[in-house]
Length: 329
Image 1 (cartoon, one colour):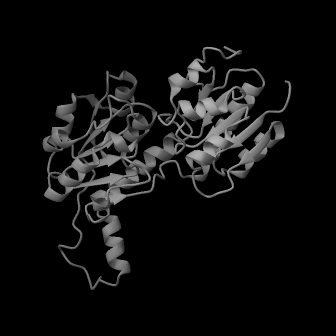
Image 2: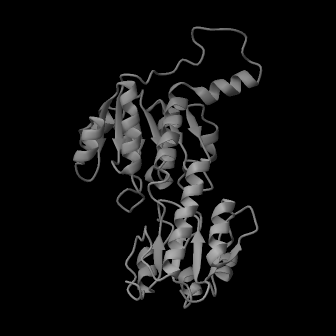
């Protein structure tokens, strides 16, 4: 197998994952409970054989160059990899991997948590009660929307979108979906009907986004889309922040163009428009979609396993690119 690899992990993750890596590699871990600064990241990738990165790490040509010539793989601790310039990594013969499948349940569940919280005004009611404002039952107190029997619009029919839609069957919902093309397996599993984007926006009571961040999906939901939605509609985004035009969302919520929203992601994370925090008709979470003990452990195990496989000269299980100069390909 050759020499032990020198691996850097950009944030502290589950101890069993670090121990797994240490059995095979020499490992250094970011000691701070925060993302590395740009300067720190450029320094730490130098001389490494592998880097285990977070979704918050921006891996561009500058970072990739700093990691050369020793680095063979960037193992991303996320299903998405829009934080890494894949083409630039491929040009340099550097492998990139992700962690699909293991966070499907966690991510789809957080979308449902947001949907119910927004529909039934859970967060607003909780705050009201904690502040001692509850003086007794009232017929107009925090009146929300029922979910059962409503129309659910799902944009994106991949793993997470499918898991999310399957759960809707328990609430007797009419499911319509949109994607770049029809997904017959999705339709069979969920009973969903394909619809064009405009139809979905006009007919859905709840709309949940499950697409990757691409140039074609950036601001997929903006000013024009909000105008098409029902004024009773609720939008859920637990995918990637830039899919929604945040300014347009704020305006739609303020004017009553839509009834509510639930976000686990923001357009410019970790920053978000301060106007969002002032609105009562939105639930906002700090990107915790994969934050279950099961998902986070399994994400780490896959990322570590990818690094160990590469060290052994094998093709990593979840390789997402085709490095032009990688010896194993």
